[in-house]
Amino acid sequence: MKISKEIKVETAGLAVELLAAAVPELSKGRLKDAMNKGAVIWRRGKQQKRLRRAQSPVVAGDLLQLHYDDDLLSRQCEPAVLLADERTFSLWYKPPGMLSQGNEWGDHLSLLRFAEQQLGNRAVFLIHRLDREASGLLLLAHSPKMAASLSQLIQQQQMAKHYQVLVRGKLSQDLLEEGVIRQKLDGKTCETRFKLCAHQPDANHSLLDIKLISGRKHQIRRHFAAIGHAVMGDPRYGEQNQDPAGLGLQAVELSFQLPGQQKIYHYKLPAELRRYG
Image (cartoon, rainbow, N blue to C red; front, side, top):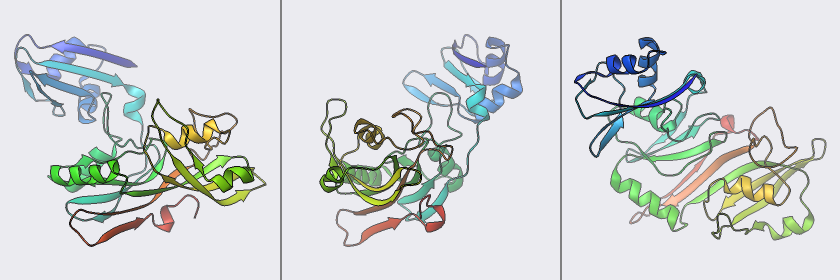
């Protein structure tokens, strides 16, 4: 069942009571579960937030937006893993199936929400993203100042991000010697550098080490699909690249230096969390 509905509050009351009256096909139990998982948005003028408490009071003029998808709300995935806590920022392992951040349909399967619950009252800011199907290293900031500093490093290409990617087929020697894809995406220049880690002739797959020089949406997946070597297990790009093991893309290494500091932060995904060793 999938329901998307906006409810204008006419008289003051409790959120769950008004939702139950407006959407009688959903029980209060289902509505409470949806609220807890971030599927109800409350608006008052310019204010907006996810309304999680069923007993939250609302007043006339408020807007409630319900985005209910029982399939999405019932999904589960492995928990994220906190790998390093530097107080002003933290490093996490995002498992496959987990979103980087939520959307209007909820946030219970997002790293941001998971981190909020694990870290208590600390603010959480997303710095960069990984596709839902991908796994690996993700940074979160815990203050607006640190979020701005880390975002600037990414924009200025001063944060090195490495990925391991399993692609379909054997790359030609010319491609391997060039080691770069510079095809424009969405009308913008972008660059993906790569080198061969291993070729698996029995499965006709190639494992590549990837360095992103830019960060367009689905850049790695789109670039390798465009040259005929789609990422294995990609449900969106490429052909004949199905893989029951899932998307063969993992963020495995991050390094950067914060402004005004001598220390270089260098993180590698632990061996026990790596897909390809």
